Image 1 (tube, one colour):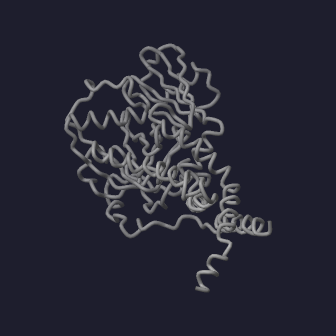
Image 2: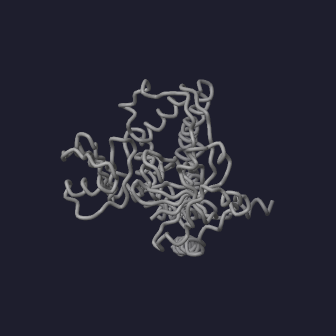
Image 3: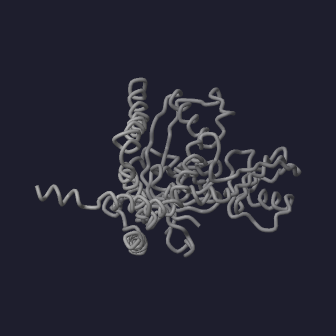
Length: 189
Length: 194
């Protein structure tokens, strides 16, 4: 009986002490790899800091850039941004319904949006984030997809949207240029 | 000789049983949480395990305004919404989306057809899935690690709860082997066919 009580108490103590000792996630190594040239482009539109309310929720790693880049500028000339770290601000117009592993950020121009992809499980965006405003930091990647690759990607997105049953591959044109902001940190409010 | 005897005298089985029992009690709630959420999340290709997404359709008059603020004001007025949306977006020339908390209005501007998409977290399942998928991060990561260690201890100590015919040297051994064959067999077949 004494053994049982001692075991139970010590296990409980380990659980509680570990939980209480946890510190917030440390700043990432992104500081070291941040592209300082991102701030010198003419497409940088705003200082991001002051517009963010204190109630904003942080996802993943700490943002390192201070100035935002317009989505329209990235989409207009994606190759010039390829491999560069940028900070983008806009409304979250879509959230991956299956895993919360990507969001689409509405652009500063109509009909434009940029997909912000995070590693599965590292950040999980809740569906309730849809419609909120996001500051997302990441690296721009640009891929040329053949029609077959574009169909495969669209099929995967349809699966994540839960619209696979109505997916029509004949509507997918190709080849396409796929522009993605791959990131590890975001601030949502 | 005396070393072997003292090892035999150690009440290791009593300790093993005590560990198995007490860790088992401690792990009941987490096992239920992870088990229930596991089934729900396994089938997420077929349903959304965390949210209930409802779609309703309503009709308003077509919106002919060309400027976005006017479109938004017109749609908000026609839909009788009490406040302005958090954000609005035009995915294509004929659609206007209005974002409210847990609700999105997709307005087809030329026809006035509106799809109202509501997103409501599923009761209990949402919270269980959050814990299972480590949504909270921070301290929960370590609690989940401890739980994983507890499961390993449960598995090992469970092997030695019973002695004799029903224990690991008898029926228990056969069942353990059968249980091991499930992942090994699947892994082998998956690798061969995959």
